[in-house]
Length: 249
Length: 289
Image (tube, rainbow over all chains, first blue to last red; front, side):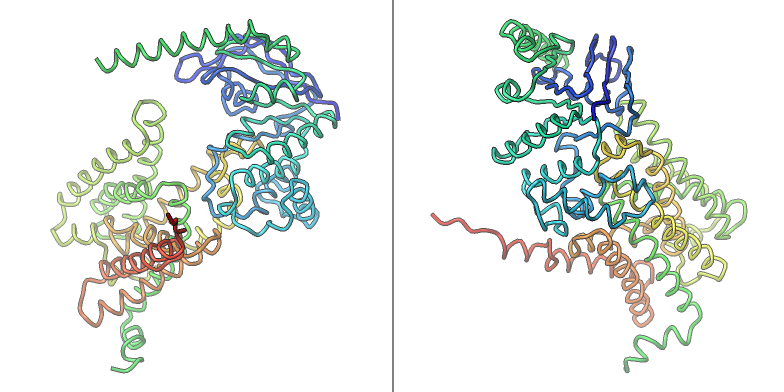
Protein backbone atom coordinates (compact mmCIF):
# COMPACT_ATOMS: atom_id res chain seq x y z
CA UNK A 1 0.00 0.00 0.00
CA UNK A 2 2.23 2.77 -1.19
CA UNK A 3 -0.08 5.70 -1.44
CA UNK A 4 -0.60 8.77 0.60
CA UNK A 5 2.02 11.44 0.43
CA UNK A 6 1.44 14.72 2.23
CA UNK A 7 3.29 17.77 0.99
CA UNK A 8 3.31 21.19 2.61
CA UNK A 9 4.28 24.45 0.99
CA UNK A 10 5.17 27.59 2.93
CA UNK A 11 2.97 26.40 5.81
CA UNK A 12 2.43 28.72 8.77
CA UNK A 13 0.19 28.00 11.75
CA UNK A 14 -0.78 30.57 14.36
CA UNK A 15 -2.39 30.57 17.80
CA UNK A 16 -4.20 33.83 18.61
CA UNK A 17 -2.39 35.62 15.77
CA UNK A 18 1.04 34.58 17.07
CA UNK A 19 2.88 32.37 14.61
CA UNK A 20 3.67 29.06 16.30
CA UNK A 21 5.26 27.69 13.18
CA UNK A 22 6.22 29.22 9.86
CA UNK A 23 7.77 28.48 6.51
CA UNK A 24 7.47 24.69 6.48
CA UNK A 25 8.19 23.39 3.02
CA UNK A 26 8.59 19.80 1.91
CA UNK A 27 6.97 16.42 1.42
CA UNK A 28 6.23 13.33 3.50
CA UNK A 29 6.63 10.84 0.63
CA UNK A 30 4.29 7.88 0.31
CA UNK A 31 5.70 4.99 2.33
CA UNK A 32 8.27 7.17 4.11
CA UNK A 33 8.93 7.11 7.85
CA UNK A 34 9.70 10.50 9.34
CA UNK A 35 10.45 11.60 12.90
CA UNK A 36 9.51 15.16 13.84
CA UNK A 37 11.99 16.44 16.42
CA UNK A 38 12.90 19.72 18.07
CA UNK A 39 13.10 21.50 21.42
CA UNK A 40 10.05 22.03 23.66
CA UNK A 41 7.72 24.60 22.14
CA UNK A 42 9.19 24.13 18.67
CA UNK A 43 5.76 23.60 17.12
CA UNK A 44 5.93 19.83 16.64
CA UNK A 45 2.39 19.11 17.86
CA UNK A 46 1.18 22.22 16.05
CA UNK A 47 2.46 20.81 12.77
CA UNK A 48 0.84 17.45 13.49
CA UNK A 49 -2.50 19.07 14.31
CA UNK A 50 -2.38 21.04 11.08
CA UNK A 51 -1.59 17.88 9.09
CA UNK A 52 -4.53 16.08 10.68
CA UNK A 53 -6.83 19.03 10.07
CA UNK A 54 -7.49 20.05 13.68
CA UNK A 55 -5.70 23.38 13.21
CA UNK A 56 -6.17 25.55 10.15
CA UNK A 57 -3.06 26.92 8.44
CA UNK A 58 -2.60 30.70 8.78
CA UNK A 59 -0.98 30.64 5.34
CA UNK A 60 0.51 28.12 2.94
CA UNK A 61 -0.97 24.82 1.88
CA UNK A 62 -1.19 21.17 2.85
CA UNK A 63 -1.71 18.84 -0.09
CA UNK A 64 -2.70 15.20 0.27
CA UNK A 65 -2.03 12.93 -2.69
CA UNK A 66 -4.30 9.95 -3.47
CA UNK A 67 -5.89 10.10 -0.05
CA UNK A 68 -8.73 11.84 1.74
CA UNK A 69 -8.74 13.13 5.32
CA UNK A 70 -10.18 9.85 6.60
CA UNK A 71 -7.17 7.91 5.31
CA UNK A 72 -5.03 9.54 7.98
CA UNK A 73 -4.98 7.76 11.34
CA UNK A 74 -4.00 10.01 14.24
CA UNK A 75 -2.74 9.20 17.72
CA UNK A 76 -3.08 12.28 19.96
CA UNK A 77 -0.83 12.95 22.95
CA UNK A 78 -1.80 10.81 25.92
CA UNK A 79 -2.72 13.88 27.98
CA UNK A 80 -5.49 14.78 25.54
CA UNK A 81 -7.54 11.69 26.39
CA UNK A 82 -9.52 11.37 29.61
CA UNK A 83 -8.50 7.98 30.96
CA UNK A 84 -11.06 8.07 33.76
CA UNK A 85 -13.86 8.06 31.19
CA UNK A 86 -16.19 5.08 31.69
CA UNK A 87 -15.52 3.20 28.47
CA UNK A 88 -14.24 -0.36 27.98
CA UNK A 89 -11.03 -1.37 26.23
CA UNK A 90 -12.98 -3.17 23.51
CA UNK A 91 -15.18 -0.16 22.76
CA UNK A 92 -12.12 2.09 22.56
CA UNK A 93 -10.43 -0.17 20.02
CA UNK A 94 -13.66 -0.59 18.08
CA UNK A 95 -13.74 3.15 17.42
CA UNK A 96 -10.95 2.41 14.94
CA UNK A 97 -13.62 0.93 12.66
CA UNK A 98 -15.26 4.37 12.37
CA UNK A 99 -14.78 4.34 8.61
CA UNK A 100 -17.08 1.30 8.43
CA UNK A 101 -19.50 2.05 11.25
CA UNK A 102 -19.62 5.83 11.04
CA UNK A 103 -21.49 7.65 13.76
CA UNK A 104 -24.62 5.53 13.49
CA UNK A 105 -23.83 2.19 11.81
CA UNK A 106 -23.78 -1.10 13.66
CA UNK A 107 -20.54 -2.74 14.83
CA UNK A 108 -20.70 -6.04 12.96
CA UNK A 109 -19.28 -9.37 14.05
CA UNK A 110 -16.42 -8.76 11.62
CA UNK A 111 -15.51 -5.60 13.52
CA UNK A 112 -15.67 -7.48 16.82
CA UNK A 113 -13.34 -10.17 15.49
CA UNK A 114 -10.87 -7.61 14.19
CA UNK A 115 -10.98 -5.87 17.57
CA UNK A 116 -9.95 -9.08 19.32
CA UNK A 117 -7.20 -9.68 16.76
CA UNK A 118 -5.88 -6.15 17.18
CA UNK A 119 -5.80 -6.51 20.96
CA UNK A 120 -3.93 -9.79 20.59
CA UNK A 121 -1.45 -8.13 18.22
CA UNK A 122 -0.51 -5.54 20.88
CA UNK A 123 -0.23 -8.22 23.57
CA UNK A 124 -3.50 -7.57 25.36
CA UNK A 125 -5.60 -10.70 24.74
CA UNK A 126 -8.85 -10.95 26.61
CA UNK A 127 -8.95 -7.53 28.27
CA UNK A 128 -11.69 -6.22 25.97
CA UNK A 129 -14.26 -5.99 28.71
CA UNK A 130 -12.04 -4.18 31.19
CA UNK A 131 -12.46 -0.48 31.90
CA UNK A 132 -9.67 1.70 30.48
CA UNK A 133 -9.14 3.29 33.91
CA UNK A 134 -7.80 -0.04 35.18
CA UNK A 135 -4.91 -0.09 32.69
CA UNK A 136 -1.39 1.25 33.18
CA UNK A 137 -0.15 4.07 30.93
CA UNK A 138 1.76 1.56 28.82
CA UNK A 139 -1.21 -0.78 28.47
CA UNK A 140 -3.45 2.11 27.50
CA UNK A 141 -0.99 3.15 24.79
CA UNK A 142 -1.13 -0.44 23.50
CA UNK A 143 -4.92 -0.07 23.33
CA UNK A 144 -4.60 3.09 21.23
CA UNK A 145 -2.19 1.28 18.90
CA UNK A 146 -4.76 -1.49 18.57
CA UNK A 147 -7.22 1.19 17.51
CA UNK A 148 -4.72 2.35 14.87
CA UNK A 149 -4.47 -1.26 13.66
CA UNK A 150 -8.23 -1.32 13.19
CA UNK A 151 -8.15 1.99 11.33
CA UNK A 152 -5.87 0.31 8.77
CA UNK A 153 -4.94 3.70 7.30
CA UNK A 154 -2.30 4.37 4.62
CA UNK A 155 -1.01 7.35 6.62
CA UNK A 156 -0.34 7.13 10.38
CA UNK A 157 0.50 10.20 12.43
CA UNK A 158 1.70 9.78 16.04
CA UNK A 159 2.13 12.61 18.55
CA UNK A 160 4.66 11.63 21.24
CA UNK A 161 3.65 7.97 21.30
CA UNK A 162 6.31 6.94 23.86
CA UNK A 163 6.17 9.72 26.46
CA UNK A 164 5.87 8.22 29.96
CA UNK A 165 5.69 4.69 28.55
CA UNK A 166 7.73 1.78 29.94
CA UNK A 167 10.66 0.38 27.96
CA UNK A 168 9.14 -2.97 27.10
CA UNK A 169 6.00 -1.37 25.68
CA UNK A 170 8.07 1.15 23.72
CA UNK A 171 10.02 -1.68 22.10
CA UNK A 172 6.87 -3.64 21.24
CA UNK A 173 5.16 -0.60 19.74
CA UNK A 174 8.29 0.36 17.80
CA UNK A 175 8.20 -3.13 16.28
CA UNK A 176 4.62 -2.44 15.24
CA UNK A 177 5.63 0.88 13.64
CA UNK A 178 8.43 -0.85 11.74
CA UNK A 179 5.90 -3.42 10.54
CA UNK A 180 3.68 -0.62 9.24
CA UNK A 181 6.72 0.86 7.50
CA UNK A 182 7.33 -2.54 5.92
CA UNK A 183 3.75 -2.47 4.64
CA UNK A 184 4.66 0.81 2.88
CA UNK A 185 2.42 2.99 5.01
CA UNK A 186 3.42 6.62 5.47
CA UNK A 187 4.48 7.28 9.07
CA UNK A 188 5.00 10.61 10.81
CA UNK A 189 5.88 10.62 14.52
CA UNK A 190 6.80 13.31 17.04
CA UNK A 191 9.61 11.93 19.20
CA UNK A 192 11.97 13.14 21.92
CA UNK A 193 14.52 10.36 22.16
CA UNK A 194 17.23 11.18 19.58
CA UNK A 195 18.90 7.76 19.85
CA UNK A 196 15.56 6.11 19.17
CA UNK A 197 15.06 8.33 16.12
CA UNK A 198 18.55 7.63 14.75
CA UNK A 199 18.09 3.88 15.24
CA UNK A 200 14.61 3.57 13.73
CA UNK A 201 13.63 6.48 11.55
CA UNK A 202 15.15 6.90 8.06
CA UNK A 203 14.04 10.55 7.79
CA UNK A 204 13.75 13.43 10.23
CA UNK A 205 12.25 16.89 10.28
CA UNK A 206 13.96 19.22 12.77
CA UNK A 207 11.80 22.13 13.91
CA UNK A 208 12.38 25.25 16.00
CA UNK A 209 9.25 27.22 15.18
CA UNK A 210 10.55 27.04 11.64
CA UNK A 211 12.14 24.36 9.54
CA UNK A 212 15.77 23.82 10.54
CA UNK A 213 16.33 20.71 8.45
CA UNK A 214 14.33 18.02 6.66
CA UNK A 215 15.95 14.96 5.10
CA UNK A 216 17.82 11.75 5.90
CA UNK A 217 18.07 11.47 9.68
CA UNK A 218 21.89 11.69 10.00
CA UNK A 219 22.00 14.86 7.89
CA UNK A 220 18.94 16.53 9.40
CA UNK A 221 20.08 15.81 12.94
CA UNK A 222 23.70 16.82 12.48
CA UNK A 223 25.43 18.46 15.42
CA UNK A 224 25.36 21.83 13.67
CA UNK A 225 21.62 21.66 13.04
CA UNK A 226 20.84 20.58 16.60
CA UNK A 227 22.97 23.43 17.92
CA UNK A 228 21.10 25.90 15.77
CA UNK A 229 17.73 24.58 16.99
CA UNK A 230 18.86 24.86 20.60
CA UNK A 231 20.10 28.42 20.10
CA UNK A 232 16.74 29.42 18.67
CA UNK A 233 14.92 27.76 21.57
CA UNK A 234 17.07 29.68 24.07
CA UNK A 235 16.22 32.90 22.29
CA UNK A 236 12.43 32.39 22.50
CA UNK A 237 12.72 31.23 26.11
CA UNK A 238 14.56 34.46 26.95
CA UNK A 239 11.90 36.46 25.18
CA UNK A 240 9.15 34.68 27.12
CA UNK A 241 10.99 35.38 30.39
CA UNK A 242 11.35 39.05 29.51
CA UNK A 243 7.67 39.31 28.69
CA UNK A 244 6.81 37.51 31.92
CA UNK A 245 8.97 39.88 33.96
CA UNK A 246 7.43 42.89 32.25
CA UNK A 247 3.94 41.56 32.96
CA UNK A 248 4.78 41.12 36.65
CA UNK A 249 6.36 44.58 36.97
CA UNK B 1 -49.49 3.17 59.61
CA UNK B 2 -49.58 0.41 57.03
CA UNK B 3 -47.28 0.06 54.07
CA UNK B 4 -50.20 0.88 51.79
CA UNK B 5 -51.19 3.99 53.68
CA UNK B 6 -47.58 5.15 53.80
CA UNK B 7 -46.44 4.65 50.23
CA UNK B 8 -49.42 4.02 47.96
CA UNK B 9 -52.46 5.77 49.35
CA UNK B 10 -51.28 9.35 48.72
CA UNK B 11 -51.05 8.63 45.01
CA UNK B 12 -54.34 6.71 44.83
CA UNK B 13 -56.31 9.35 46.68
CA UNK B 14 -54.93 12.55 45.19
CA UNK B 15 -54.64 13.39 41.49
CA UNK B 16 -52.04 16.10 42.10
CA UNK B 17 -49.77 13.56 43.81
CA UNK B 18 -50.15 11.17 40.89
CA UNK B 19 -49.25 13.86 38.38
CA UNK B 20 -46.28 14.94 40.49
CA UNK B 21 -45.04 11.34 40.61
CA UNK B 22 -45.36 10.89 36.85
CA UNK B 23 -43.50 14.18 36.36
CA UNK B 24 -40.65 12.92 38.56
CA UNK B 25 -40.55 9.65 36.65
CA UNK B 26 -40.30 11.45 33.32
CA UNK B 27 -37.76 13.99 34.61
CA UNK B 28 -35.56 11.25 36.03
CA UNK B 29 -35.44 9.39 32.73
CA UNK B 30 -34.44 12.51 30.81
CA UNK B 31 -32.31 14.41 33.33
CA UNK B 32 -30.42 11.44 34.78
CA UNK B 33 -28.51 10.47 31.62
CA UNK B 34 -28.06 14.12 30.58
CA UNK B 35 -26.57 14.86 34.00
CA UNK B 36 -24.09 11.98 33.64
CA UNK B 37 -22.88 13.35 30.29
CA UNK B 38 -22.63 16.88 31.72
CA UNK B 39 -20.52 15.59 34.60
CA UNK B 40 -18.23 13.59 32.31
CA UNK B 41 -17.70 16.73 30.23
CA UNK B 42 -16.74 18.56 33.43
CA UNK B 43 -19.66 20.91 32.84
CA UNK B 44 -21.56 20.37 36.10
CA UNK B 45 -21.53 24.05 37.00
CA UNK B 46 -22.44 25.04 33.46
CA UNK B 47 -25.68 23.11 33.94
CA UNK B 48 -26.35 25.11 37.08
CA UNK B 49 -25.65 28.38 35.29
CA UNK B 50 -27.91 27.44 32.40
CA UNK B 51 -30.83 26.66 34.69
CA UNK B 52 -30.64 30.26 35.92
CA UNK B 53 -30.29 31.55 32.41
CA UNK B 54 -33.75 30.16 31.62
CA UNK B 55 -35.36 32.59 34.06
CA UNK B 56 -35.65 35.83 32.05
CA UNK B 57 -37.20 33.95 29.12
CA UNK B 58 -39.67 32.24 31.42
CA UNK B 59 -40.35 35.62 33.03
CA UNK B 60 -41.18 37.19 29.68
CA UNK B 61 -43.52 34.27 29.02
CA UNK B 62 -45.11 34.98 32.40
CA UNK B 63 -45.44 38.67 31.55
CA UNK B 64 -47.23 37.85 28.30
CA UNK B 65 -49.41 34.93 29.32
CA UNK B 66 -49.41 34.74 33.12
CA UNK B 67 -48.54 31.45 34.86
CA UNK B 68 -48.92 29.50 31.61
CA UNK B 69 -46.36 26.73 31.55
CA UNK B 70 -46.03 26.37 27.75
CA UNK B 71 -45.45 30.12 27.33
CA UNK B 72 -42.88 30.14 30.10
CA UNK B 73 -41.34 26.97 28.68
CA UNK B 74 -40.85 28.44 25.23
CA UNK B 75 -39.44 31.66 26.67
CA UNK B 76 -37.07 29.70 28.89
CA UNK B 77 -35.90 27.57 25.98
CA UNK B 78 -35.03 30.63 23.90
CA UNK B 79 -33.22 32.37 26.75
CA UNK B 80 -31.30 29.24 27.77
CA UNK B 81 -30.07 28.56 24.25
CA UNK B 82 -29.13 32.20 23.74
CA UNK B 83 -26.99 32.20 26.88
CA UNK B 84 -25.38 28.87 25.96
CA UNK B 85 -24.43 30.16 22.51
CA UNK B 86 -23.37 33.61 23.69
CA UNK B 87 -21.02 32.32 26.38
CA UNK B 88 -19.46 29.97 23.87
CA UNK B 89 -18.96 32.94 21.57
CA UNK B 90 -17.53 35.16 24.31
CA UNK B 91 -15.02 32.53 25.38
CA UNK B 92 -13.84 32.10 21.80
CA UNK B 93 -13.49 35.80 21.04
CA UNK B 94 -12.24 37.26 24.35
CA UNK B 95 -9.78 36.18 27.03
CA UNK B 96 -12.59 35.09 29.38
CA UNK B 97 -12.88 31.33 29.79
CA UNK B 98 -16.25 29.69 29.20
CA UNK B 99 -17.01 29.20 32.91
CA UNK B 100 -16.38 32.89 33.67
CA UNK B 101 -18.67 34.04 30.88
CA UNK B 102 -21.34 31.53 31.97
CA UNK B 103 -21.16 32.93 35.51
CA UNK B 104 -21.55 36.50 34.24
CA UNK B 105 -24.44 35.66 31.97
CA UNK B 106 -26.33 33.71 34.56
CA UNK B 107 -26.08 36.42 37.22
CA UNK B 108 -27.37 38.95 34.73
CA UNK B 109 -30.21 36.71 33.63
CA UNK B 110 -31.19 35.77 37.19
CA UNK B 111 -31.45 39.45 38.14
CA UNK B 112 -33.30 40.30 34.94
CA UNK B 113 -35.71 37.41 35.45
CA UNK B 114 -36.58 38.35 39.03
CA UNK B 115 -37.05 41.96 37.92
CA UNK B 116 -39.43 41.03 35.10
CA UNK B 117 -41.53 38.71 37.27
CA UNK B 118 -41.90 41.34 39.98
CA UNK B 119 -43.06 43.88 37.36
CA UNK B 120 -46.37 42.15 37.20
CA UNK B 121 -46.50 39.26 39.60
CA UNK B 122 -46.80 38.91 43.36
CA UNK B 123 -44.21 37.44 45.67
CA UNK B 124 -46.08 34.15 45.43
CA UNK B 125 -45.59 34.13 41.65
CA UNK B 126 -41.92 34.82 42.18
CA UNK B 127 -41.67 31.89 44.59
CA UNK B 128 -43.34 29.66 42.00
CA UNK B 129 -40.89 30.70 39.32
CA UNK B 130 -37.86 30.30 41.56
CA UNK B 131 -38.78 27.09 43.32
CA UNK B 132 -41.35 25.41 41.11
CA UNK B 133 -44.80 24.07 41.73
CA UNK B 134 -44.55 20.33 41.40
CA UNK B 135 -47.88 19.77 43.18
CA UNK B 136 -49.66 22.16 40.80
CA UNK B 137 -48.62 20.42 37.58
CA UNK B 138 -51.61 20.05 35.26
CA UNK B 139 -52.07 17.70 32.33
CA UNK B 140 -50.78 20.25 29.87
CA UNK B 141 -47.50 20.67 31.75
CA UNK B 142 -47.22 16.93 32.17
CA UNK B 143 -47.48 16.42 28.41
CA UNK B 144 -44.76 19.03 27.87
CA UNK B 145 -42.44 17.38 30.39
CA UNK B 146 -43.10 13.90 29.04
CA UNK B 147 -42.54 14.97 25.42
CA UNK B 148 -39.23 16.66 26.25
CA UNK B 149 -37.88 13.73 28.24
CA UNK B 150 -39.08 11.08 25.75
CA UNK B 151 -37.52 13.10 22.94
CA UNK B 152 -34.30 13.31 24.96
CA UNK B 153 -34.15 9.55 25.41
CA UNK B 154 -34.65 8.99 21.68
CA UNK B 155 -32.08 11.60 20.59
CA UNK B 156 -29.55 10.30 23.11
CA UNK B 157 -29.99 6.78 21.76
CA UNK B 158 -29.44 8.04 18.21
CA UNK B 159 -26.34 10.17 18.77
CA UNK B 160 -24.90 8.11 21.62
CA UNK B 161 -21.70 7.08 19.83
CA UNK B 162 -20.54 10.46 18.48
CA UNK B 163 -21.55 12.14 21.73
CA UNK B 164 -19.47 9.71 23.77
CA UNK B 165 -16.46 9.99 21.45
CA UNK B 166 -16.68 13.79 21.37
CA UNK B 167 -16.38 13.71 25.15
CA UNK B 168 -13.79 10.92 25.47
CA UNK B 169 -11.39 11.72 22.62
CA UNK B 170 -12.42 14.83 20.64
CA UNK B 171 -9.18 14.82 18.61
CA UNK B 172 -10.00 11.36 17.29
CA UNK B 173 -13.52 12.36 16.27
CA UNK B 174 -12.17 15.34 14.32
CA UNK B 175 -9.48 13.22 12.68
CA UNK B 176 -12.08 10.77 11.34
CA UNK B 177 -14.17 13.64 10.04
CA UNK B 178 -16.89 13.65 12.72
CA UNK B 179 -18.49 17.02 13.33
CA UNK B 180 -17.86 17.33 17.06
CA UNK B 181 -19.20 20.86 17.47
CA UNK B 182 -22.50 19.83 15.90
CA UNK B 183 -23.01 17.14 18.55
CA UNK B 184 -21.85 19.52 21.25
CA UNK B 185 -24.55 22.00 20.19
CA UNK B 186 -27.17 19.27 20.04
CA UNK B 187 -26.18 18.21 23.53
CA UNK B 188 -26.47 21.79 24.85
CA UNK B 189 -29.92 21.91 23.28
CA UNK B 190 -30.91 18.74 25.16
CA UNK B 191 -29.57 20.21 28.41
CA UNK B 192 -31.65 23.37 28.00
CA UNK B 193 -34.76 21.38 27.02
CA UNK B 194 -34.48 19.19 30.12
CA UNK B 195 -33.90 22.19 32.35
CA UNK B 196 -37.07 23.74 30.92
CA UNK B 197 -38.91 20.53 31.76
CA UNK B 198 -37.48 20.44 35.29
CA UNK B 199 -38.20 24.15 35.70
CA UNK B 200 -41.92 23.40 35.72
CA UNK B 201 -41.48 21.12 38.69
CA UNK B 202 -38.55 22.40 40.69
CA UNK B 203 -38.19 26.02 39.66
CA UNK B 204 -35.20 27.75 38.18
CA UNK B 205 -33.07 27.47 41.32
CA UNK B 206 -33.38 23.73 41.76
CA UNK B 207 -33.96 22.48 38.22
CA UNK B 208 -30.48 20.95 38.11
CA UNK B 209 -31.20 19.03 41.32
CA UNK B 210 -32.49 15.96 39.50
CA UNK B 211 -29.70 16.31 36.93
CA UNK B 212 -26.43 16.69 38.82
CA UNK B 213 -27.03 14.95 42.16
CA UNK B 214 -28.12 11.60 40.64
CA UNK B 215 -25.20 11.85 38.18
CA UNK B 216 -22.70 12.22 41.02
CA UNK B 217 -24.31 9.27 42.81
CA UNK B 218 -24.06 7.18 39.65
CA UNK B 219 -20.38 8.03 39.23
CA UNK B 220 -19.74 6.67 42.72
CA UNK B 221 -21.42 3.32 42.01
CA UNK B 222 -21.24 2.35 38.34
CA UNK B 223 -18.21 1.85 36.08
CA UNK B 224 -19.74 1.74 32.62
CA UNK B 225 -21.57 4.59 30.96
CA UNK B 226 -24.87 2.75 30.34
CA UNK B 227 -24.91 1.59 33.96
CA UNK B 228 -24.20 5.15 35.12
CA UNK B 229 -27.11 6.47 33.11
CA UNK B 230 -29.42 3.78 34.49
CA UNK B 231 -28.33 4.42 38.09
CA UNK B 232 -28.74 8.19 37.62
CA UNK B 233 -32.24 7.80 36.20
CA UNK B 234 -33.15 5.36 38.97
CA UNK B 235 -31.84 7.62 41.74
CA UNK B 236 -33.68 10.61 40.26
CA UNK B 237 -36.98 8.69 40.10
CA UNK B 238 -36.53 7.25 43.58
CA UNK B 239 -35.68 10.68 45.00
CA UNK B 240 -38.87 12.02 43.46
CA UNK B 241 -40.94 9.23 45.00
CA UNK B 242 -39.40 9.40 48.48
CA UNK B 243 -39.43 13.20 48.47
CA UNK B 244 -43.10 13.32 47.50
CA UNK B 245 -44.17 10.74 50.09
CA UNK B 246 -42.18 12.49 52.83
CA UNK B 247 -43.49 15.93 51.95
CA UNK B 248 -47.04 14.53 51.94
CA UNK B 249 -46.90 12.93 55.37
CA UNK B 250 -44.77 15.50 57.17
CA UNK B 251 -46.18 18.54 55.34
CA UNK B 252 -42.89 19.75 53.89
CA UNK B 253 -42.37 21.74 50.71
CA UNK B 254 -42.16 19.03 48.07
CA UNK B 255 -39.52 20.48 45.66
CA UNK B 256 -36.87 20.87 48.37
CA UNK B 257 -37.85 17.49 49.86
CA UNK B 258 -37.11 15.83 46.50
CA UNK B 259 -33.77 17.57 46.02
CA UNK B 260 -32.79 16.89 49.65
CA UNK B 261 -33.58 13.20 49.17
CA UNK B 262 -31.24 13.16 46.18
CA UNK B 263 -28.63 14.92 48.35
CA UNK B 264 -28.99 12.22 51.00
CA UNK B 265 -28.33 9.58 48.33
CA UNK B 266 -25.26 11.58 47.36
CA UNK B 267 -23.85 11.85 50.89
CA UNK B 268 -24.53 8.19 51.60
CA UNK B 269 -22.76 7.25 48.35
CA UNK B 270 -19.81 9.47 49.22
CA UNK B 271 -19.36 7.33 52.31
CA UNK B 272 -20.13 3.83 51.09
CA UNK B 273 -20.06 3.96 47.25
CA UNK B 274 -17.46 2.08 45.20
CA UNK B 275 -15.47 5.22 44.54
CA UNK B 276 -16.30 6.66 47.95
CA UNK B 277 -14.46 7.26 51.21
CA UNK B 278 -14.98 3.93 52.96
CA UNK B 279 -13.88 1.98 49.90
CA UNK B 280 -10.72 4.06 49.54
CA UNK B 281 -9.82 3.76 53.22
CA UNK B 282 -10.09 -0.02 53.11
CA UNK B 283 -8.36 -0.66 49.80
CA UNK B 284 -5.52 1.85 50.19
CA UNK B 285 -2.19 0.02 50.10
CA UNK B 286 -0.29 0.28 53.35
CA UNK B 287 3.41 0.95 53.44
CA UNK B 288 5.41 -0.57 56.23
CA UNK B 289 8.71 0.80 57.59
